[in-house]
Image (cartoon, rainbow, N blue to C red; front, side, top):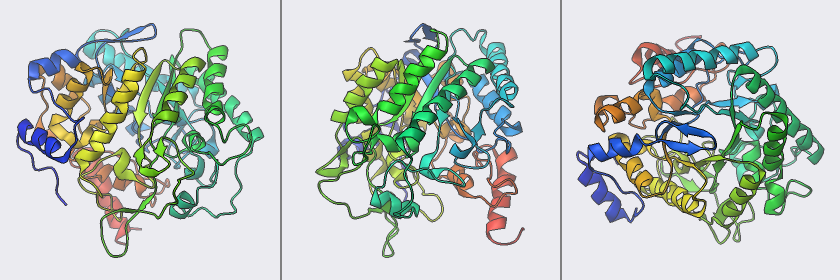
Length: 475
Protein backbone atom coordinates (compact mmCIF):
# COMPACT_ATOMS: atom_id res chain seq x y z
CA UNK A 1 0.00 0.00 0.00
CA UNK A 2 1.34 3.42 -0.96
CA UNK A 3 1.41 5.83 1.97
CA UNK A 4 3.84 8.51 0.82
CA UNK A 5 1.78 10.70 -1.52
CA UNK A 6 2.92 14.11 -0.32
CA UNK A 7 3.89 16.89 -2.70
CA UNK A 8 4.45 19.57 -0.07
CA UNK A 9 5.61 19.91 3.51
CA UNK A 10 2.17 21.19 4.48
CA UNK A 11 0.57 17.99 3.20
CA UNK A 12 2.74 15.65 5.29
CA UNK A 13 2.39 17.91 8.34
CA UNK A 14 -1.40 17.85 8.00
CA UNK A 15 -1.38 14.05 7.62
CA UNK A 16 0.68 13.74 10.83
CA UNK A 17 -1.81 15.94 12.67
CA UNK A 18 -4.80 13.98 11.38
CA UNK A 19 -3.25 10.67 12.46
CA UNK A 20 -2.41 11.95 15.93
CA UNK A 21 1.33 11.74 15.26
CA UNK A 22 1.82 14.77 17.48
CA UNK A 23 5.60 14.37 17.80
CA UNK A 24 6.20 14.60 14.04
CA UNK A 25 6.76 18.30 13.44
CA UNK A 26 8.74 20.20 10.84
CA UNK A 27 10.84 23.32 10.41
CA UNK A 28 9.60 24.80 7.12
CA UNK A 29 12.30 27.42 6.54
CA UNK A 30 15.31 25.99 4.60
CA UNK A 31 17.64 28.60 6.09
CA UNK A 32 16.66 27.62 9.62
CA UNK A 33 17.08 23.96 8.69
CA UNK A 34 20.59 24.73 7.49
CA UNK A 35 21.48 26.86 10.52
CA UNK A 36 20.11 24.36 13.03
CA UNK A 37 21.75 21.28 11.58
CA UNK A 38 25.04 23.12 11.03
CA UNK A 39 25.39 23.74 14.77
CA UNK A 40 28.21 21.84 16.52
CA UNK A 41 27.49 19.40 19.34
CA UNK A 42 29.78 18.81 22.29
CA UNK A 43 30.44 15.11 22.99
CA UNK A 44 32.83 14.68 25.92
CA UNK A 45 35.99 16.55 24.86
CA UNK A 46 35.14 16.70 21.13
CA UNK A 47 33.25 19.58 19.56
CA UNK A 48 31.52 17.66 16.77
CA UNK A 49 31.25 19.95 13.77
CA UNK A 50 27.54 19.73 13.01
CA UNK A 51 24.35 18.05 14.21
CA UNK A 52 24.14 15.41 11.45
CA UNK A 53 24.98 11.74 11.87
CA UNK A 54 25.26 8.69 9.66
CA UNK A 55 23.99 5.66 11.53
CA UNK A 56 25.95 2.36 11.54
CA UNK A 57 24.83 0.77 8.27
CA UNK A 58 26.14 -2.71 7.52
CA UNK A 59 27.25 -3.21 3.95
CA UNK A 60 27.66 -7.00 4.20
CA UNK A 61 30.63 -6.45 1.92
CA UNK A 62 33.65 -7.45 3.97
CA UNK A 63 36.08 -10.26 3.17
CA UNK A 64 35.52 -13.73 4.60
CA UNK A 65 38.16 -13.07 7.26
CA UNK A 66 36.23 -10.02 8.53
CA UNK A 67 38.44 -7.42 6.88
CA UNK A 68 36.97 -4.45 5.00
CA UNK A 69 36.87 -5.05 1.26
CA UNK A 70 36.66 -2.88 -1.86
CA UNK A 71 33.00 -1.90 -1.46
CA UNK A 72 33.56 -1.16 2.25
CA UNK A 73 36.27 1.37 1.37
CA UNK A 74 34.06 2.87 -1.31
CA UNK A 75 31.09 3.28 1.06
CA UNK A 76 33.07 4.98 3.82
CA UNK A 77 34.84 7.16 1.29
CA UNK A 78 31.45 8.42 0.13
CA UNK A 79 30.37 9.03 3.72
CA UNK A 80 33.64 10.85 4.43
CA UNK A 81 33.10 13.27 1.57
CA UNK A 82 29.45 13.80 2.45
CA UNK A 83 29.80 16.32 5.26
CA UNK A 84 28.20 14.63 8.30
CA UNK A 85 30.43 15.08 11.34
CA UNK A 86 29.30 11.94 13.20
CA UNK A 87 30.06 8.91 11.01
CA UNK A 88 29.17 5.81 12.99
CA UNK A 89 31.06 2.74 11.82
CA UNK A 90 28.96 -0.35 11.27
CA UNK A 91 28.63 -3.43 13.46
CA UNK A 92 32.02 -5.07 13.89
CA UNK A 93 32.02 -8.49 15.51
CA UNK A 94 34.26 -9.08 18.51
CA UNK A 95 34.52 -12.80 17.72
CA UNK A 96 34.13 -14.87 14.58
CA UNK A 97 31.18 -16.76 16.05
CA UNK A 98 29.43 -13.44 16.71
CA UNK A 99 28.97 -12.52 13.04
CA UNK A 100 25.46 -12.24 11.58
CA UNK A 101 26.68 -13.12 8.09
CA UNK A 102 29.81 -14.40 6.42
CA UNK A 103 30.83 -10.93 5.24
CA UNK A 104 30.21 -8.95 8.40
CA UNK A 105 33.24 -7.02 9.63
CA UNK A 106 35.19 -8.71 12.41
CA UNK A 107 38.30 -7.19 13.95
CA UNK A 108 41.14 -9.46 15.07
CA UNK A 109 44.89 -9.26 15.41
CA UNK A 110 45.50 -10.32 11.79
CA UNK A 111 43.50 -7.49 10.19
CA UNK A 112 44.14 -4.47 12.42
CA UNK A 113 46.13 -2.83 9.63
CA UNK A 114 43.15 -3.15 7.27
CA UNK A 115 40.90 -1.34 9.74
CA UNK A 116 43.61 1.29 10.22
CA UNK A 117 43.73 1.88 6.47
CA UNK A 118 39.92 2.11 6.27
CA UNK A 119 39.87 4.75 8.98
CA UNK A 120 42.83 6.66 7.57
CA UNK A 121 41.25 6.71 4.09
CA UNK A 122 38.07 8.14 5.61
CA UNK A 123 40.00 10.78 7.53
CA UNK A 124 42.06 11.78 4.52
CA UNK A 125 39.01 12.15 2.28
CA UNK A 126 37.13 14.14 4.92
CA UNK A 127 40.15 16.35 5.56
CA UNK A 128 40.52 17.05 1.86
CA UNK A 129 36.82 17.89 1.43
CA UNK A 130 36.13 19.72 4.71
CA UNK A 131 39.50 21.05 5.85
CA UNK A 132 39.80 19.28 9.22
CA UNK A 133 38.99 16.10 11.07
CA UNK A 134 39.38 17.64 14.52
CA UNK A 135 35.59 17.98 14.71
CA UNK A 136 34.79 14.54 13.21
CA UNK A 137 33.66 11.68 15.46
CA UNK A 138 33.92 8.09 14.20
CA UNK A 139 32.78 5.49 16.77
CA UNK A 140 33.43 1.81 16.09
CA UNK A 141 30.37 -0.31 16.86
CA UNK A 142 31.22 -3.56 18.67
CA UNK A 143 28.79 -6.46 18.51
CA UNK A 144 27.95 -10.10 19.00
CA UNK A 145 24.94 -11.19 16.95
CA UNK A 146 23.62 -13.69 19.48
CA UNK A 147 20.70 -15.77 18.19
CA UNK A 148 21.23 -14.28 14.72
CA UNK A 149 24.85 -15.40 14.49
CA UNK A 150 25.91 -17.80 11.75
CA UNK A 151 26.38 -20.67 11.67
CA UNK A 152 25.92 -21.18 15.43
CA UNK A 153 23.35 -19.20 17.41
CA UNK A 154 23.97 -17.91 20.92
CA UNK A 155 20.82 -17.36 22.98
CA UNK A 156 20.53 -15.17 26.07
CA UNK A 157 17.12 -16.51 27.12
CA UNK A 158 14.06 -18.20 25.67
CA UNK A 159 11.16 -16.01 24.61
CA UNK A 160 8.69 -18.47 23.02
CA UNK A 161 7.44 -15.87 20.54
CA UNK A 162 10.91 -14.96 19.32
CA UNK A 163 11.88 -18.65 19.32
CA UNK A 164 8.89 -19.33 17.05
CA UNK A 165 9.70 -16.46 14.70
CA UNK A 166 13.42 -17.29 14.55
CA UNK A 167 12.99 -21.07 14.37
CA UNK A 168 14.92 -21.56 17.62
CA UNK A 169 14.39 -24.95 19.29
CA UNK A 170 12.86 -24.68 22.75
CA UNK A 171 15.68 -26.82 24.15
CA UNK A 172 18.53 -24.81 22.59
CA UNK A 173 21.15 -24.10 25.27
CA UNK A 174 21.36 -20.61 26.77
CA UNK A 175 24.75 -18.93 27.16
CA UNK A 176 26.01 -19.29 30.73
CA UNK A 177 27.02 -16.53 33.10
CA UNK A 178 30.62 -17.69 32.98
CA UNK A 179 30.61 -17.56 29.17
CA UNK A 180 29.17 -14.06 29.27
CA UNK A 181 31.87 -12.95 31.68
CA UNK A 182 34.53 -14.25 29.29
CA UNK A 183 32.78 -12.52 26.39
CA UNK A 184 33.09 -9.20 28.22
CA UNK A 185 36.84 -9.54 27.85
CA UNK A 186 36.46 -10.29 24.13
CA UNK A 187 34.75 -6.92 23.77
CA UNK A 188 37.63 -5.25 25.57
CA UNK A 189 40.17 -7.08 23.40
CA UNK A 190 38.34 -5.89 20.26
CA UNK A 191 38.32 -2.31 21.56
CA UNK A 192 42.08 -2.53 22.16
CA UNK A 193 42.56 -3.63 18.55
CA UNK A 194 40.32 -0.81 17.37
CA UNK A 195 42.38 1.64 19.40
CA UNK A 196 45.52 0.23 17.79
CA UNK A 197 43.88 0.88 14.40
CA UNK A 198 43.27 4.52 15.34
CA UNK A 199 39.70 4.58 16.66
CA UNK A 200 39.10 6.81 19.66
CA UNK A 201 35.39 6.15 20.20
CA UNK A 202 33.67 2.81 20.79
CA UNK A 203 30.02 1.84 20.93
CA UNK A 204 28.27 -1.26 22.21
CA UNK A 205 25.43 -2.50 20.00
CA UNK A 206 22.56 -3.09 22.41
CA UNK A 207 19.74 -3.19 19.89
CA UNK A 208 17.99 -5.10 17.09
CA UNK A 209 17.68 -8.39 18.96
CA UNK A 210 21.39 -9.19 19.07
CA UNK A 211 23.01 -10.66 22.16
CA UNK A 212 23.39 -7.56 24.34
CA UNK A 213 19.94 -6.38 23.32
CA UNK A 214 18.43 -9.76 24.16
CA UNK A 215 20.01 -9.59 27.60
CA UNK A 216 18.15 -6.34 28.24
CA UNK A 217 14.84 -8.19 27.92
CA UNK A 218 15.88 -11.31 29.85
CA UNK A 219 13.55 -10.76 32.79
CA UNK A 220 13.08 -14.50 33.33
CA UNK A 221 16.77 -15.39 33.07
CA UNK A 222 18.36 -16.54 36.31
CA UNK A 223 21.82 -15.59 37.52
CA UNK A 224 24.01 -12.52 37.35
CA UNK A 225 22.82 -11.31 33.94
CA UNK A 226 19.05 -11.72 34.20
CA UNK A 227 16.04 -10.74 36.24
CA UNK A 228 16.48 -7.26 37.71
CA UNK A 229 17.24 -4.28 35.48
CA UNK A 230 20.60 -3.94 37.26
CA UNK A 231 21.50 -7.51 36.30
CA UNK A 232 20.31 -7.06 32.74
CA UNK A 233 22.52 -3.98 32.39
CA UNK A 234 25.49 -5.76 33.98
CA UNK A 235 27.18 -6.93 30.78
CA UNK A 236 27.18 -3.60 28.97
CA UNK A 237 28.08 -1.68 32.15
CA UNK A 238 30.99 -4.02 32.88
CA UNK A 239 32.31 -3.68 29.32
CA UNK A 240 32.14 0.12 29.45
CA UNK A 241 34.12 0.15 32.68
CA UNK A 242 36.65 -2.39 31.42
CA UNK A 243 37.26 -0.49 28.18
CA UNK A 244 37.73 2.73 30.12
CA UNK A 245 40.25 1.00 32.42
CA UNK A 246 42.10 -0.60 29.51
CA UNK A 247 42.36 2.42 27.22
CA UNK A 248 43.21 6.10 27.44
CA UNK A 249 40.91 8.36 29.39
CA UNK A 250 40.12 10.39 26.27
CA UNK A 251 38.31 7.47 24.60
CA UNK A 252 34.62 8.25 24.05
CA UNK A 253 32.17 5.49 25.02
CA UNK A 254 28.73 5.10 23.50
CA UNK A 255 25.78 2.73 23.27
CA UNK A 256 23.19 2.21 20.55
CA UNK A 257 20.27 1.23 22.71
CA UNK A 258 17.12 -0.54 21.59
CA UNK A 259 14.66 1.32 23.80
CA UNK A 260 11.51 -0.62 22.84
CA UNK A 261 11.53 -4.28 21.78
CA UNK A 262 7.85 -4.72 20.93
CA UNK A 263 6.64 -8.22 20.04
CA UNK A 264 7.19 -10.45 16.99
CA UNK A 265 4.91 -9.96 13.98
CA UNK A 266 4.03 -12.38 11.19
CA UNK A 267 2.35 -12.22 7.79
CA UNK A 268 -0.83 -14.25 8.34
CA UNK A 269 -2.16 -16.58 5.60
CA UNK A 270 -5.30 -14.49 5.15
CA UNK A 271 -3.75 -11.04 4.69
CA UNK A 272 -0.50 -9.36 3.62
CA UNK A 273 -0.74 -6.98 6.61
CA UNK A 274 1.43 -7.90 9.58
CA UNK A 275 -0.09 -8.92 12.86
CA UNK A 276 1.51 -9.71 16.22
CA UNK A 277 1.91 -13.27 17.37
CA UNK A 278 -0.50 -13.97 20.24
CA UNK A 279 1.13 -12.77 23.44
CA UNK A 280 0.35 -13.32 27.13
CA UNK A 281 -0.73 -10.57 29.51
CA UNK A 282 1.12 -9.59 31.57
CA UNK A 283 3.90 -9.85 29.01
CA UNK A 284 6.92 -11.26 30.87
CA UNK A 285 9.64 -10.51 28.30
CA UNK A 286 11.33 -7.65 26.54
CA UNK A 287 12.80 -4.24 27.24
CA UNK A 288 10.92 -0.97 27.19
CA UNK A 289 7.53 -2.68 26.78
CA UNK A 290 4.37 -2.05 28.73
CA UNK A 291 3.68 -5.40 30.42
CA UNK A 292 -0.08 -4.79 30.21
CA UNK A 293 0.11 -3.79 26.51
CA UNK A 294 3.42 -4.73 24.85
CA UNK A 295 2.38 -2.92 21.67
CA UNK A 296 3.19 0.26 23.60
CA UNK A 297 6.38 1.42 25.26
CA UNK A 298 7.08 1.90 28.95
CA UNK A 299 10.31 3.80 29.49
CA UNK A 300 10.61 3.28 33.25
CA UNK A 301 13.29 0.59 32.94
CA UNK A 302 14.86 2.31 29.94
CA UNK A 303 15.51 5.43 31.98
CA UNK A 304 17.00 3.35 34.78
CA UNK A 305 19.24 1.58 32.27
CA UNK A 306 20.43 4.86 30.73
CA UNK A 307 21.28 6.15 34.19
CA UNK A 308 23.27 2.98 34.94
CA UNK A 309 25.13 3.20 31.64
CA UNK A 310 25.99 6.85 32.27
CA UNK A 311 27.38 5.84 35.68
CA UNK A 312 29.47 3.21 33.88
CA UNK A 313 30.94 5.78 31.48
CA UNK A 314 28.52 6.19 28.53
CA UNK A 315 28.98 9.64 26.96
CA UNK A 316 26.87 9.35 23.80
CA UNK A 317 23.71 7.37 22.99
CA UNK A 318 21.96 6.42 19.78
CA UNK A 319 18.28 5.53 20.17
CA UNK A 320 16.88 2.61 18.19
CA UNK A 321 13.71 0.53 18.37
CA UNK A 322 12.45 -2.93 17.48
CA UNK A 323 14.14 -5.83 15.74
CA UNK A 324 14.46 -6.16 11.94
CA UNK A 325 14.09 -9.94 12.22
CA UNK A 326 10.69 -9.97 13.90
CA UNK A 327 9.04 -6.52 13.72
CA UNK A 328 10.86 -4.47 11.04
CA UNK A 329 8.14 -1.81 10.83
CA UNK A 330 8.93 -0.74 14.41
CA UNK A 331 12.55 0.13 13.75
CA UNK A 332 12.33 1.11 10.09
CA UNK A 333 8.94 2.43 8.94
CA UNK A 334 8.80 1.49 5.25
CA UNK A 335 6.86 2.07 2.08
CA UNK A 336 7.32 -1.47 0.74
CA UNK A 337 8.36 -4.58 2.72
CA UNK A 338 11.27 -6.72 1.71
CA UNK A 339 10.28 -9.77 -0.30
CA UNK A 340 8.03 -12.19 1.57
CA UNK A 341 7.59 -9.95 4.59
CA UNK A 342 4.42 -8.33 5.85
CA UNK A 343 2.88 -4.99 4.90
CA UNK A 344 2.90 -2.16 7.45
CA UNK A 345 0.28 -2.81 10.17
CA UNK A 346 0.19 0.92 10.96
CA UNK A 347 0.64 4.11 9.01
CA UNK A 348 4.41 4.72 8.79
CA UNK A 349 3.96 8.17 10.33
CA UNK A 350 2.84 6.48 13.54
CA UNK A 351 6.08 4.53 13.55
CA UNK A 352 8.04 7.73 12.99
CA UNK A 353 6.09 9.31 15.84
CA UNK A 354 7.05 6.43 18.15
CA UNK A 355 10.74 7.06 17.36
CA UNK A 356 10.44 10.79 18.01
CA UNK A 357 8.33 10.36 21.14
CA UNK A 358 10.78 7.96 22.78
CA UNK A 359 13.96 9.81 21.80
CA UNK A 360 12.47 13.10 22.91
CA UNK A 361 11.46 11.83 26.33
CA UNK A 362 14.90 10.34 26.91
CA UNK A 363 16.76 13.45 25.75
CA UNK A 364 14.69 15.66 28.03
CA UNK A 365 15.25 13.26 30.94
CA UNK A 366 19.02 13.26 30.34
CA UNK A 367 19.76 16.77 29.04
CA UNK A 368 23.52 16.42 29.50
CA UNK A 369 23.72 13.23 27.41
CA UNK A 370 24.00 13.79 23.64
CA UNK A 371 21.41 11.55 21.97
CA UNK A 372 21.18 10.65 18.29
CA UNK A 373 17.65 10.37 16.89
CA UNK A 374 16.53 7.66 14.47
CA UNK A 375 13.47 6.91 12.34
CA UNK A 376 13.72 9.65 9.71
CA UNK A 377 14.22 7.84 6.40
CA UNK A 378 10.54 7.30 5.58
CA UNK A 379 10.03 11.09 5.62
CA UNK A 380 12.22 11.31 2.49
CA UNK A 381 13.02 14.94 1.53
CA UNK A 382 11.18 16.15 4.62
CA UNK A 383 13.45 14.20 6.99
CA UNK A 384 15.79 17.17 7.43
CA UNK A 385 12.88 19.46 8.30
CA UNK A 386 11.80 17.03 11.04
CA UNK A 387 15.39 16.61 12.22
CA UNK A 388 15.93 20.35 12.46
CA UNK A 389 12.70 20.78 14.42
CA UNK A 390 13.66 18.03 16.88
CA UNK A 391 17.14 19.50 17.38
CA UNK A 392 15.74 23.00 17.83
CA UNK A 393 13.13 21.78 20.31
CA UNK A 394 15.71 19.90 22.39
CA UNK A 395 14.30 16.47 21.54
CA UNK A 396 17.66 15.22 20.21
CA UNK A 397 21.18 16.54 19.77
CA UNK A 398 21.93 14.76 16.50
CA UNK A 399 19.69 14.11 13.52
CA UNK A 400 20.71 10.72 12.14
CA UNK A 401 20.03 9.00 8.82
CA UNK A 402 20.65 5.31 8.15
CA UNK A 403 19.54 3.51 4.98
CA UNK A 404 18.87 6.86 3.31
CA UNK A 405 22.63 7.48 3.30
CA UNK A 406 23.19 4.48 1.04
CA UNK A 407 21.23 6.40 -1.57
CA UNK A 408 22.40 9.88 -0.59
CA UNK A 409 25.78 9.74 1.22
CA UNK A 410 26.29 13.50 0.79
CA UNK A 411 22.94 14.57 2.20
CA UNK A 412 24.75 16.70 4.79
CA UNK A 413 26.47 18.72 2.07
CA UNK A 414 23.07 19.49 0.56
CA UNK A 415 21.79 20.62 3.97
CA UNK A 416 24.82 22.81 4.60
CA UNK A 417 24.73 24.38 1.14
CA UNK A 418 21.02 24.90 0.53
CA UNK A 419 18.98 23.58 3.47
CA UNK A 420 17.09 21.12 1.26
CA UNK A 421 17.47 17.71 -0.37
CA UNK A 422 17.20 16.65 -4.00
CA UNK A 423 14.09 14.51 -4.41
CA UNK A 424 15.73 12.67 -7.30
CA UNK A 425 18.33 11.21 -4.94
CA UNK A 426 16.44 10.45 -1.75
CA UNK A 427 15.66 6.94 -0.44
CA UNK A 428 12.02 5.91 -1.01
CA UNK A 429 12.18 3.10 1.64
CA UNK A 430 11.43 0.39 -0.93
CA UNK A 431 13.78 -2.03 0.94
CA UNK A 432 15.97 -3.05 -1.98
CA UNK A 433 18.91 -2.83 0.44
CA UNK A 434 17.18 -5.31 2.77
CA UNK A 435 16.46 -7.61 -0.17
CA UNK A 436 20.19 -7.85 -0.81
CA UNK A 437 20.97 -8.34 2.89
CA UNK A 438 18.60 -11.30 3.09
CA UNK A 439 19.93 -13.18 0.06
CA UNK A 440 22.68 -15.66 0.87
CA UNK A 441 23.16 -17.45 -2.48
CA UNK A 442 26.31 -15.46 -3.26
CA UNK A 443 29.56 -17.48 -3.61
CA UNK A 444 30.80 -15.77 -0.42
CA UNK A 445 27.57 -16.59 1.39
CA UNK A 446 26.17 -13.06 1.40
CA UNK A 447 25.31 -10.42 -1.19
CA UNK A 448 26.69 -6.94 -0.48
CA UNK A 449 24.00 -4.37 0.17
CA UNK A 450 23.50 -0.87 -1.13
CA UNK A 451 20.94 1.17 -3.04
CA UNK A 452 20.21 -0.25 -6.52
CA UNK A 453 17.88 2.61 -7.57
CA UNK A 454 20.27 5.45 -6.68
CA UNK A 455 23.67 3.73 -6.86
CA UNK A 456 22.90 1.85 -10.07
CA UNK A 457 26.42 1.51 -11.40
CA UNK A 458 27.49 -0.71 -8.52
CA UNK A 459 24.34 -2.25 -7.04
CA UNK A 460 22.16 -2.45 -10.16
CA UNK A 461 24.08 -5.45 -11.54
CA UNK A 462 24.30 -6.99 -8.05
CA UNK A 463 20.53 -7.04 -7.48
CA UNK A 464 19.97 -8.22 -11.04
CA UNK A 465 22.25 -11.18 -10.35
CA UNK A 466 20.61 -11.91 -6.99
CA UNK A 467 17.17 -11.98 -8.61
CA UNK A 468 18.39 -14.20 -11.43
CA UNK A 469 19.88 -16.65 -8.96
CA UNK A 470 16.60 -16.70 -7.04
CA UNK A 471 14.69 -17.47 -10.24
CA UNK A 472 17.12 -20.29 -11.00
CA UNK A 473 18.51 -18.66 -14.13
CA UNK A 474 22.04 -18.51 -12.71
CA UNK A 475 23.88 -21.04 -10.63
